[in-house]
Length: 206
Image 1 (cartoon, rainbow, N blue to C red):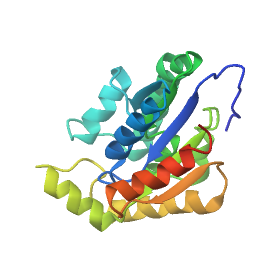
Image 2 (cartoon, rainbow, N blue to C red):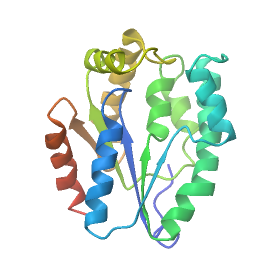
Image 3 (spheres, rainbow, N blue to C red):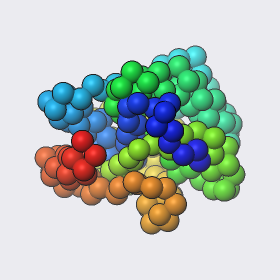
Image 4 (cartoon, helix red, strand yellow):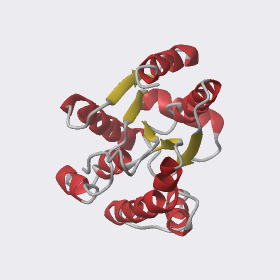
């Protein structure tokens, strides 16, 4: 993975990862409000994006058309390249703290269902590393309960058997120490406690 280049990136890049139903969106919103209260400029974004390639991915996730998991991960990489070039890096160059829901860690975790992990890392190695990554750790069983309680249908990866494998892949990423500043946060605590842990870590760099 490429190292951060301070001469190019004036802002910061923070990524949230986790299973669907882990509460990422809630924590992103709370962190956004917290940083703004400190006078920090922020820019929120997500993967897949709302651009053309991201639209193709969303169509697969909602069962409008089909593609192999390998093909899906290659689409994610193409979407990611465009996302970085058109949105993330320009926002950072303006001094924003960019907060993204999902990044290449999702490709490694979700793609590991049907693909070699080293290959998944290889096809993402040219993408910049985030300054901080928060993995919101919530068990597949709890995530499925949350998903089923809030929606009428599930998406492509939202089956407990699949989520168990994805969950283990995320845990391996956290345990490997391969990626700097990758923090595993217990997402089964009260929302305020999860947010409090994240704020303590954030305060070290702001």
